[in-house]
Image (tube, rainbow, N blue to C red):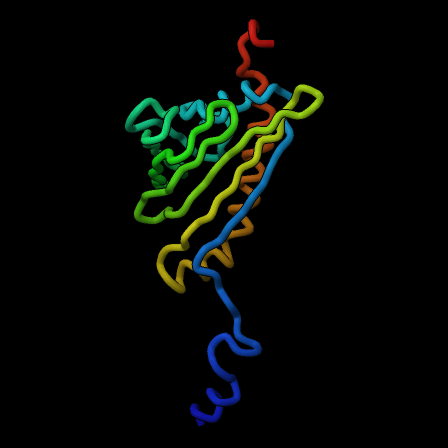
Length: 174
């Protein structure tokens, strides 16, 4: 009966069990043909995210958006319907990195981007996320199914960023 099947299946987490993480991490990067200061300025132009981050608008909601203690709000979606991601800036090194804590009801965790100069005058832009999956088991299953699409969208957006960021430099800066 059912008890015999459960005994054969073994304890949760035993051989054959599928483990679904409660948190997920990802790190991706892109080379940008622009100096680090231009890349950092483009990445922290929150309203400018609409030019490169797939389906996303962003804005500072508290503070100057360029210092620890500032808050941000991003909305990702289509036709005005989407997910809201609120964040507090917790790490800010001008021209180098910005770290945030996701504070929303759905999107929670931490994120950081960093910019490193290359010897040829370009830069490497690195984006990292550590997300706490919402909705228990349902959220973990959702990530298992939707995570590859999220990773693709982030990679696509970073390629768009690499094309857009160099265009943001003022003529005096180039």
